[in-house]
Length: 381
Image 1 (spheres, rainbow, N blue to C red):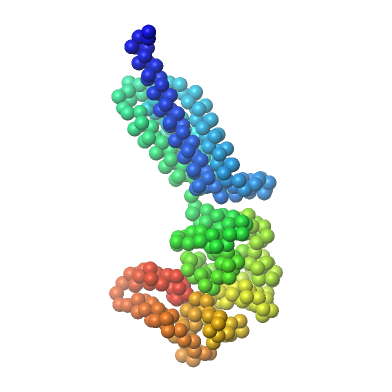
Image 2 (cartoon, one colour):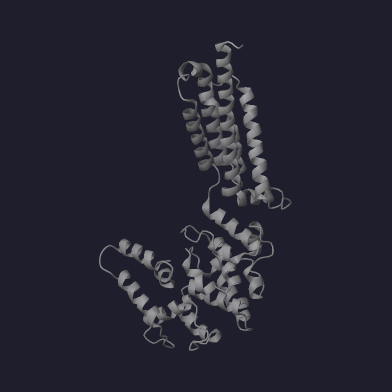
């Protein structure tokens, strides 16, 4: 029969193993979710860039491998610190956290390296103190509480030091969905965010064009300064994002845009493609004029591509809004376009925009109620 002392040691040993396994499992689960859910597209993209396109898009596989490696590294670290108190066992996950940060730091490693060195130094100091004084001063402290606090600090470190640039993640996710021929899902990526970039706008335009909804939904998204250049994606940009065969030129049946003056590109190859006719080229051409706020040229060319009086083919939303605005801004418009519902909305927008009082408050209210319209882009974009 075992003595009470031996039984107590056995119980404590079992409790220690369970608490350490729980810490390892928690961090491994975090590593998997971080690499798969939050950084899945980014890790695949960075590996492809580092291997010159030789790696495959396999976020689930990379997340599994990464979480397993993090678990093995944590086990190895714990063997190097056998005297570490149970309350500080979560510190053994620090090297794994650094690896997670470095895995998601491409292409700029400078900030990640600085943060990683600082974290390792701080963790080393804490581990040294725990080894020297931990058993005496931490024996009465709840093991779960201390490890939870340390894990939370490590999670925060990974989240802040890793690449969490939302626009880049939107771009990569949108590009991947376009590769998978899911334009509807691609167009919805980051749709509620005000963060954007010219490349993201060009990717969204591709997705909307594939659905035939470019002039219907383009102005529902946040748009960067730059006018019609935001609609264009060079083959170099497309390849960088993992879209080697995708470009607006291919959709419009005209040469690819390799850089330079975007307006000349739309006035030249795109305009010629629009006259063939090509509905995709026509909508790209007209939306380019709207993005440049060239509302007179837009009104002049619209009649070449759309039957303005045809009830069978109603105009897309952006075109109707632009025509109502054109009619209000010009004393002698080329033609009068009527749409009672759109006109009523425009009158309400103008009431908000011209309201007396704080200009910033009026602008914010206009954004809340009409930020999805061409009018908002024309006056504030």
